[in-house]
Image 1 (spheres, protein in one colour):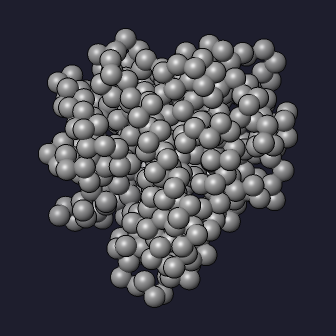
Image 2: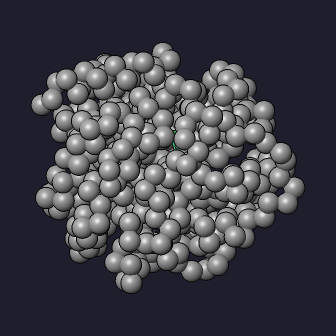
Length: 420
Ligand code: GLC
């Protein structure tokens, strides 16, 4: 085990620790982000398990009454980020954004609890979190799957965590920019603008935000009102996996109603996932609900589907796809196929490698028996760290560090990869 890397990773995490929550990185992201926190909790658990549970508790302390868990919690004022609390205006006692992010907390909870060496000491905390995580999963099915298709839609690209993926380009042509209030971006003052989304994309992000704000953040109206309704296979795989893991955890704790309902969500989701399989791409694809069609975009969203228990034959196809990508990139797994025309190796989710996504894909493929490719993903991830440090993301050809530095969830994933 590389103790030096683990020590460095601990340092990054401690540096970004604000006591009861962690910032993704100082400067660029000065608040608490939803899926960053859940994945970072996995890292904390290796050196301070109690702190890991605190991270999740803080996140769920800001859950909305309808069950949604927001994507950002603005614990403290900081004008270094746009759009800040004054733009979202969600009316929460502690300001939050008004959209959500990939629900990976259920998975993180089970993993941390399974490995816990102090189960008796934490069981009451786990018991208290369980219904909250379940309420969030229920909220997804109620608010984002109105036709009961078994899969949920996102209504803003930021919800997927893959903010400016090529996957959204086509749907974005239907998101207008008229009436967008003037704004000043802050992200481009912290990092290289060539690594970030374009201004044109930002206007559309803000258009959607303003639309939802105008509807009073009423989740019973937002889905149907949104011109952007996309079913993302990666996002759904995370939800399905978290429901399946919550079912196991709930069963263990004697919460049989939660266990039954969670299992049913997961089973239905896995069946419905088949509708996202795209034979031409050889992987899963996003589905655009407004257009009623699959999105022809070979992105990592379709590979992340392997995080849930898809059929073994599908997992094998995803393993083959990643092997094919390895012919055109040095580091696995690029967030977009380097051979596709819109690939951009340094620009956010249009090509670069993210360690969190690597971790989830490797975990799923390992569980499906695709161990060789899972090992390759893990070793590429560590090579990136050795070469370029704890960056936000990396160029898959050169391994160059991109975006922000000293990144919490990157550090957490390094600890996970090394301690597996
Ligand atoms: C960016 C990423 C998102 C992440 C956030 C904080 O917005 O796209 O996935 O949660 O940064 O790291």
